[in-house]
Image 1: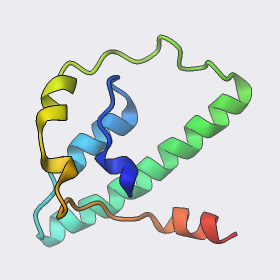
Image 2: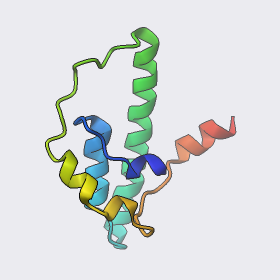
Image 3: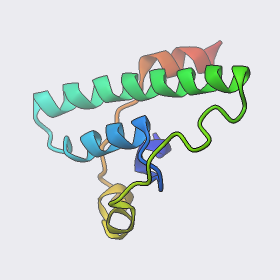
Amino acid sequence: MPFMRLVSGTRTLCEVLREINDNSQDDSLKDKKTRRLLAEAVDMAKRMARKLVEYNKEYDKGWWDKNPDYKNQMKHALRSAKDYKAEECNNTKQQNAE
């Protein structure tokens, strides 16, 4: 799940989901469930974005606010750590297999 490690300069839906993932890095059952749900939500958001691009390639031009914490997040080592946890979505695995 390399996309969960990326920091965006804009405050998108996926960026908010990434931040939630950042706050769910423990090994508790609740955090593991949260990461699985986040993987599913990110997969859904990315599929939705691909569909919107089919209708209008510039659908999101000027839509998203700037990410006010971008520079701070770039300095933060969590997303680049080897033990950063991000689950894979079963829907993505199934789509890639087809």
